[in-house]
Image (tube, rainbow, N blue to C red; front, side, top):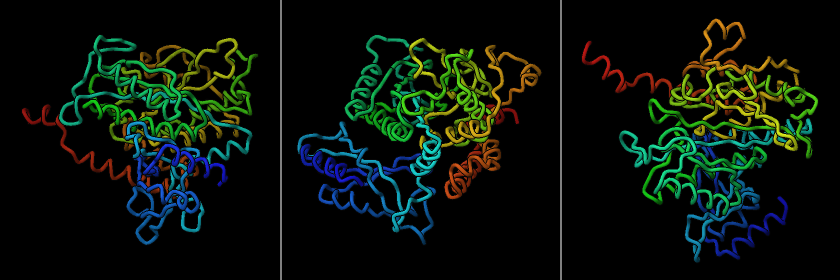
Length: 444
């Protein structure tokens, strides 16, 4: 660790009278985990990490190998703006989880992403992402969801409490050093979106975890509930996490080619081809819940069919139109992920799929600019357009056979992740739903 980083953190703690420092990391499902230390323990934590019981964390270790260390990353030190500032300030740092011998723990999602980013760096690439995380505000988390408004896309409704909630959320994010590009009402009632400014994938994964917590903290403060559940309302759009991504070599966008008809370089085309080829395999990671597949159905702006286009938002992958002078903005938008995923693992499998396309020079098919939803099955078959998995069980079966996902996640995360998803599916399929009671009880 650079002594300047350590001294910077210690100085900030002293200058801002920080009493507690929360150490953050995630389990394999992307649930944020935290424990707090006092400032008296901080210097030791920065030097040696803080021990904890890994056997209690989903997908980490067995009880006979449970000792883990949380090693704070000083670059992620931020003061929490929703906690008191006068004499009792609270800060946070993301941690890398390591073993007692100080080697990286293979079950740490942050390490999984770091490992793939290093593969990209060895090829001279920096991976940038800009996710659009959608969410809903409801009156509470109990019973049937009750929306706060009946607004639609980009609507500004008078006396809308959500406008104030978004504003406060944006200010908190920026107070924590997380730049925001847009905030607006989304398509469904009470649905909203705050777009984070693109940055490198590791920083963005940390930012996405922070973003989800800040959205919920602000909502809770005002007596409402915010959720990133993929499909909480039947008959309305679900929550997506459209993820814009690009590779840079230094200051040059590796995806841009001014001479190409699509303004895409060979690397950019192969990257898209890799995402298309592995789309079905990585869906379990980018859409990891039973509920995720209630969103991935035709008719609600969520992609189902594996195709790409320049303008068409019904495709899985969209390449936003090139604007002169904006070469650095050339990017690929993957529209299938949802915001309830583990961002570390999701960004890792996206990058791995794209790099595989570049390494093997996969051929990119022609873009599909017509509405794929309105095509007949025969038309889609003629164009070679396949579909994403229809439910969690199909996604499990596809991913379980994927060498790319297994190699990307590593044996430990891969095995535990698959096992967890199988348990979730078994619990789900044993349930008797309201739909079944409503449809069958009166007549059978």
